[in-house]
Amino acid sequence: MQPVLFTSRKASARRAFTLIEVLLGVMIMALGLLGLGAIFPLVVKQQRTAQDVVVGLSSAKSAESMLRSHTGLFDPSLNGGWAALARRYYATAKVASDGRMSWDDVLGSQNTYAVYGETVDQSAKLPGTFRISSDRGANYDVTIKSTDRLLPAGVGGVDPQFVWDAVPILANPVDKNITITDPSTLPIRLTVFIRRLDPGIRVPAGKTLLQAIADGNAVPVATDSAGQPSLNGIGGYSTFYYPQVSATYRRFGASGGPYNVLVFNLADNAPGLAAVRQVGQQLVDSDGNIYTVIALPDETGTGIPYASNRNKAVVISPGLPDELVTKGGTVQRPIEMLCTPQVPAAVNNLLIRL
Image 1: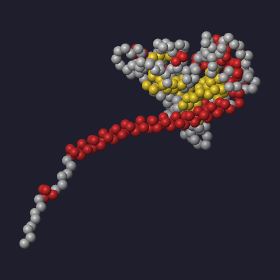
Image 2 (image 1 turned 120 degrees about the vertical axis):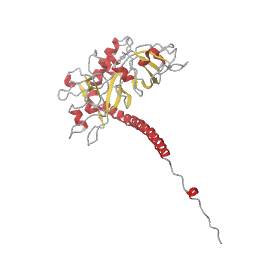
Image 3 (image 1 turned 135 degrees about the horizontal axis):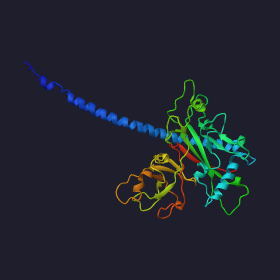
Image 4 (image 1 turned 135 degrees about the vertical axis):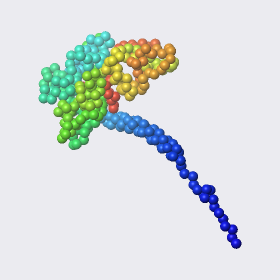
């Protein structure tokens, strides 16, 4: 007779998850998803920044092509365009003690001509119009409206993404001991900024983004009454800041190397202070050197030479050229850093020779 085998029901039963274990699992999974959710915006931002750099450089080439081929800028009569601008720049530079121009000479309220203005074209007073005035009168002024500087051009149903601006200045210092009979032969350097259009521009029904800007319902890049980017196309056309460097230092703890900490001569509430103190911001001095803001000084402790001005300082790469500072870090001559309120997608220099 075969023995009868009995199996214990308790031994064969499988252990189930308790409610507490389920809740712990859900909590762990939720924390993981929250972590991923925090990473996604950063990844999207980095991807967009990388895309802006690639597309921005391509857009800069398109802007340079227009600036080199614009008929009015190469006026053969030397009474307009780059020739007239070079002649006025030459007179301004000769007044300076070192034969150099400053960004304030180009963009300041005391300059004798307008590079950017709002009342240039009476048929369409578009803010941000690029203008070079002619010796022959306003009818011969060279004007390039902001709608002409959009990239892509906004035709064929493709919305523009970027706008470019160019700031001209004499490329080289003027020798004050030499009289140049034809200043139009002096090279002009153009600093070209590429900026992404404000992302919050509202387009009226039945209109395109280009039409909304052309109709005056929005500007490509806008600042509010406080000089800060509005990001919605409402406000004044966002042009430029050019704050002056008051002091420069090596990063605290460095025994050598470049002077890469800049302190700006700005009031605490100055709009330009917020502009320059953006990581990724591009700064351009009047010699055409381009710097990137890579950090804001955050050192703590004693002995930090710029501790009292940390809120007005940035860390740049590369550091200032040796000819601009002494061994002790003293600024040799006034240094203005040109920038836009928005961090640009690209900045490039273009040399114009007539």
